Amino acid sequence: MYDVIIRNGMVCDGTGNPWTKLDVGIRSGKIVRLAKLVFEQAEIEVDVSGCIVSPGFIDPHVHSDLLCTNPEIHKIRVLQGITTELFGQDGISVAPVSKHTKQEWQKQLKGLNGDIGDWPWETIEEYLSFLETADMIGNAAYLIPHGNIRTLVMGFEGRQATKEECREMREWVEAGMRQGAFGISSGIQYPPCAYANLEELVEICKGAAKYDGCFVVHIRNESNLSLEALDEVIEAARISGIRLHISHFKVCGKINRDKLEKALRKLEEARQEGIEVTFDQYPYTAASTMLQAILPPWAQADGTKAILNRLREPHLREKIKEEMLHNGEYDNPVRNNGWDHIVIASVVLDENKKFEGKSLQEIGEIQQKDPADAAMDLLISEEAAATMIIHWGVEEDVTKVMKNPLQMVGSDGVFGGKPHPRLYGSFARVLGKYGREEKIFSIPEAIRKMTSAPAQLLRLKDRGMIREGYWGDLVVFDPATVMDCATFENPHQLPSGIRHVFVNGKWTVSDGKYMGETAGRIIRRDHLIPSTHNHH
Image 1 (tube, rainbow, N blue to C red):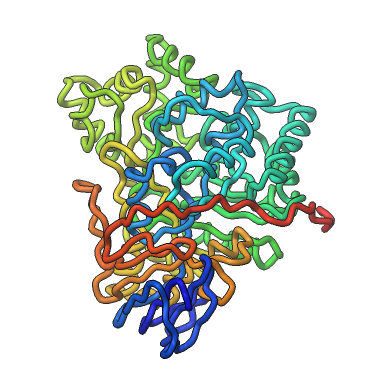
Image 2 (image 1 turned 135 degrees about the horizontal axis):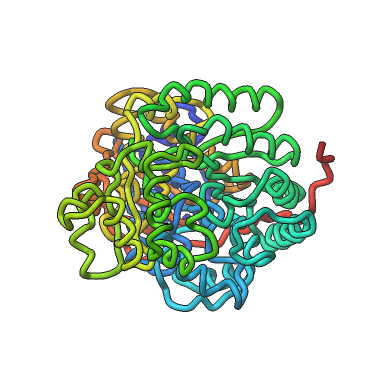
């Protein structure tokens, strides 16, 4: 007797192989049989004729670190087939913190990760244990955020670290790896990570490489200096011996399109040299992040209070305005894309809700002020908790990147307000628009990019494929109708065609409806022995 049998589906096992006709038998949370189970019975039998059975989607770039504890909000993830998420992104997340840094991180991350009140943890171990006691729908793995360990060692100071401070950061990384993290993340575009030099990046990477972790990184510049920014992280991987994964890979700004081919070639050359490089991508021509990222890096130093004080200081405000329009030395969304391509996604205050979905150009016109002043005034009134969407690119470049075998699908979805449609749409969009309609790759190849590819990045031994002995994380979808429905105008729309989802063998979504199951688990990096391979 089985707990569950999924019958008559077209099984795409996650490897990219064509589908096979098999029934899937599940017992005690795991897949125990892949065969024609004609004479077998189960407590729950689901006939999925005409549908594809895929491993559960693994999202390698999310911001669900806090809201995963609220099933009512978080259920939109499993309703699109996502069964595992990778937290701790962009070098800025919720653990580790100390009594000195916690309050500042709670304030700084409100726009990005949401608000669940005071955090009852400091270490990564305490955070993961907290999640284990929460009602989680899906599985979660964690990366050590570079910014958090940097602030433990040197506060929110906007300066380079000393050798001694780098060594101390490395020790924090090693501790986080022993507590079950899968690697380290950095967002070298965001303070405090932005103040790191190569030496600091190498040192933190060595700490994760020792435990065979990965380096997941939002590079320093995704626009005019993107090639130099790639060189920097490839060099860090080369010296430290870590494997490198680039977050939301792209080249922003129409003026920088010629750099895309060169960027892809750099990754290929790094692999030929023996550096394991991969990347994720969301399938849209627009980005989304915290509104304060429009400011030059110096203006973002020392925490939220210092940022807002600078914006109130007339001569500094003028300097910031000037740089936003003309400075090409940082990843400058205003200079690269223009005020009319930057749209407010979410705000905290009710009186500012009317600006959600409007561009900074429009908000300036409504308020009869320079868009730069409109933006800075909004940051002040929101205490920097606002987020934005930046329309940066063209469709042809998105598909060129997506076809690359190193690509995996990641949503980078941020909850709240009028979010980027990628929060709801990414995975179904790749299957429906790019797989079925535009045929840029086969459906089994699309599934590989969402399942076994991210599982390989994380070295997961028992997820990401449909195999006997693997956990029962499964998605059943209709290949004829699967499609994203979320748009920039109307982002809160679930995709069509996602029929059933099983998490750790539990039937969590049935006929497109969430069933109230919370069978998610915290996945810790299992073997805790440091690797002995020599770092060159």
